[in-house]
Length: 154
Image 1: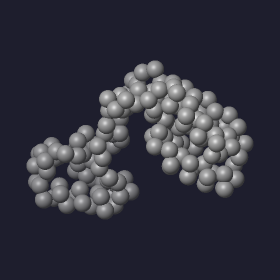
Image 2: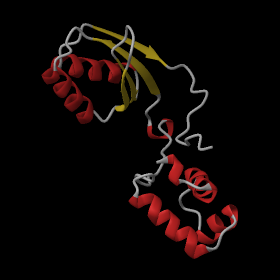
Image 3: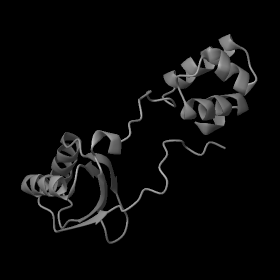
């Protein structure tokens, strides 16, 4: 699909990744095109699913969600039913911001955002009550050095 993107499309995507609330005139100026073609390209990018949705990015600490844990999960269960139940459980937990299935010794990694260690323990107890897990290791992030939603569009 990336071969469908020309340099103007890429500039539009880079511009939108920094702020989707920019006026269309500003986006057009930044990418070196006029408003109507830029608007049509944005509509096309949405239709193609390249732009999936537009969201507000919130500051978790200002909302009292001070603790970020990376949870490493090893399981002895690899059947389809277990995976389905595990995925359903993760989707129901708003604390889970990201979940990835991994290659290697660790099966899954979760990014979990909660108020504090006690809130993490509540999350952990609920998780292991729902699905059988062989081993869980939780790593507390001491400081977030970089966080972005912007993809490296070249």
